[in-house]
Each structure stands twice: as structure tokens, then as C-alpha cells.
Length: 130
Image 1 (cartoon, rainbow, N blue to C red):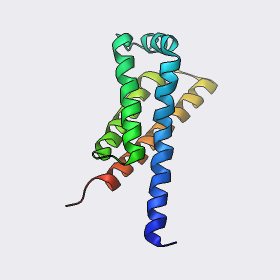
Image 2: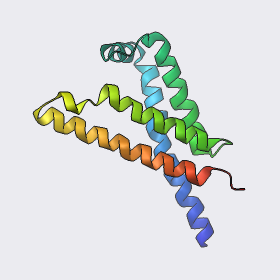
Image 3: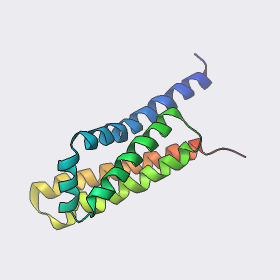
Image 4: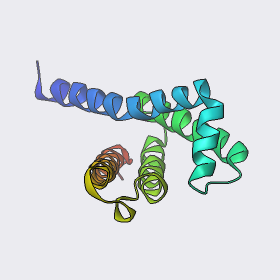
């Protein structure tokens, strides 16, 4: 197998892995719409009835664009990175907690930072060259 083929396979596997988080997340939000709406409202994201469909669309459309390496997939990756970091401010507020729950939320917070970093890296690979 050539180095070029290996790189292409690696990039596809990487994009698929990153995308799976958002594709499955969007599907889960559709399947659990009422519970997700309540959870969003409980952290101050209102009106969730408007924000949730937008979130689902973002995750499904941008996730699909990334895995398929669609035109403007690099923009989709950047949008997902911003979205991932923004979720930290509402859902992983470790700074308000103590003990084991603080440790868990801190871990989830930085997991999202790492995912955003991977998305930014993917965007840099996907951006068209001159």
C-alpha cells in the first residue's frame, strides 16, 4: 500500500471517528427530544424548542459533511469545534462543583477541548490549498 493511500485511509478513518460523535449525538437528540429539551432548559439554554432543532441540524449536517469530505467540510469542522467548546460553558461547569463530580466534569470539559482541537486540525487539512 502506498503512503498516499495510507494517508487517505487514515484521514477517512479519523474524520469518520470525529463525525460519529456528532452524528450519533444528533440521532440521540431526535430520539430523546423531550428529555433533551428539558436538559437544555435546565442549564439556561432557552428557548430549547428552537435551539434543539438547530443543534440537531448542526450535528447531523456538519457531521455528514465532515465524514463525506464534502465541499466546505473544513467550515463544518470549525463550526463543530466552536459548538463543542460552547457546550462546555453550559454542560461541564466543573468550577461550580466539588469532589468526584468536579473531577468527572473536568475530565469531560477537557475531552471536549481535545475534540475541538482535533476538529480544528481536520479543518486545516481540509481547507483548499491555493
